[in-house]
Every structure is written in structure tokens, then in C-alpha cells.
Length: 251
Length: 66
Image (cartoon, rainbow over all chains, first blue to last red; front, side, top):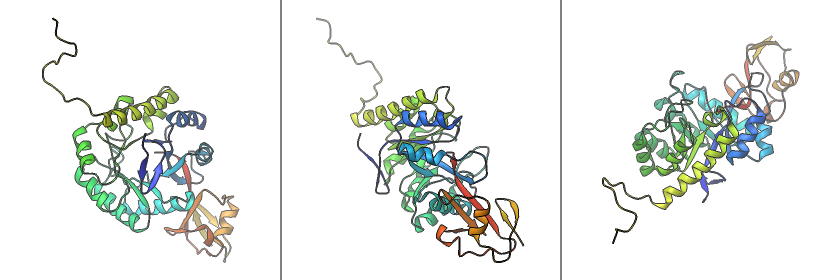
């Protein structure tokens, strides 16, 4: 597959993984390897909080680049501070920007999100915002200088798939930066669908880490993203109302 | 004199630097970031940052998430 390029840097896979929800690091390692991912999210938390150290060491050992997120932030100010701490801790200017409106939906707060994106772009970050499936907001984030836009398929962790495929298509059609379908993917067909809709990449965590067999699901997701990308490029047939015989007429 | 480190009340001597407090907690040099009073303090400035009574210090690292 041709390379995904975000903010001028080549990313070696079109499946971006998250590390949340895995039962332990051994399970996570097998899933990450099976997924073929080159970029994987981590969260920033207090050093002595749970969650355990070791995820960074694991990513380093596997040669996977870390993408710190600002999960748990509810305001632009919190997200900007978290991003700056992540840059200091991980020595990367990449950030998955999340600014969440409430804990029940975990939907992005668009006002705070755009504010934080503008501040972080000004501060030299390569900003990948987790955003609503709203073409207007996605365009504003791209105009603000974000290196990609990452619309949700459905709320984080729900596995409800892509609830508004038409919105995703509109985001893709208008996009001046890569589009990464982020959140809501439950199974492989939905990852393929995201790519068929024209997304440049898929970001998922729960669908793999909480699957009964994370390693097998990671493999399925890797293949689905590749399949969807190929199908998108191959040019699907138009939908027809009536049947269209694929065998010659009988003599 | 006290500061709050990741929510823990921590007694410090006057003149104590951020580096002193982090060393006392066994904070590693790599893979962490520190904010004092809501501002990031780069690693290179830990030794030259003197803490004040009541300072809120947050020490963060990367964990599984997202």
C-alpha cells in the first residue's frame, strides 16, 4: 500500500492502534504485532497512578511510534497542558487531541476542541484531533492547521460502527488533510467500510483489546484496512436497481 | 514548608529544588514530564527550579490508553 503521510511524516501503516483496554502487556504485545501498526496511542497519567509503567518500553521494543492523547480533558486549557507534558515526556510533537464534553457520551466538545487545536498548532504541535462526524467542524480543524482530522464513527467504545457514513464521505470529499476514522469500530467489516468511504486510516482500540481473541481481531483489522483501501482504489461498480446478468444469454 | 506532589502533601526544606523532590520520590529521568503550578518544567530546568510553599507539582507518564 502507498504510505500514509501525516504532517510530513510517513506512517508505516494505515491502522493506528490504541493500547487501552488490554488485559495485560503480553496480550497487548501480541495484538499490536498482529495488527501491523506503526503508530499507537498512549494516555498521560500521574506517575504513581494505575495503568502500570511499561507500555512505552513495549512500544519502543516493537518499533512502534507513540501517539500521546489528551484523553480525560474537558477543557482546552487542560488539553493544552496535557499535550505539552506529553511532548516533554515522550519527546514527540504528535498529539491525538481529545477534548470531551461529558463522560456519558465521551463526545468531543467542538468549541473547546477547536480552541485547543489552534493553541497547539501555534505551539508547533502536529495535531490529530478526535472530532465529531461533522464536515463543517472537520474543515475548520483542517483550516486551523491540524495535520489530520479524526472523525468518530460512533461514540468511543460502543462498537456501533459508522452511524453516519454520508457525513464521513462529505468529510473525505472536502478534506485537505488525511482523514482517520477514529472510534466506534466494532468489527472488521466496519474498518473496511471506513476505508471504502475514502478514509486514509482507521484508529481503533476497544474492538481489538476487548475482543475475546485480541490477536485474531487485530489480524482481521489489519486485513480489513488493507482490503478497504484496495477496494476504494479499485472503483466499485455502480449500484443498480434491477439485476444485470453476469453470464451470457442462453442461445 | 509543604508542596503537593501528585496529590500527596510533601514536606520540603526551604530552598529545595524540583530535582530534589523528584529524586526523593524515585522519579525516573526519562519518560516523565513535570508541571509546577500548571506550567511544564522542562527536564533541563529541574535543578534550577526552587519550589515554594504550597506549589502543586504533577508528575506524569505514559500509560495504556486510547
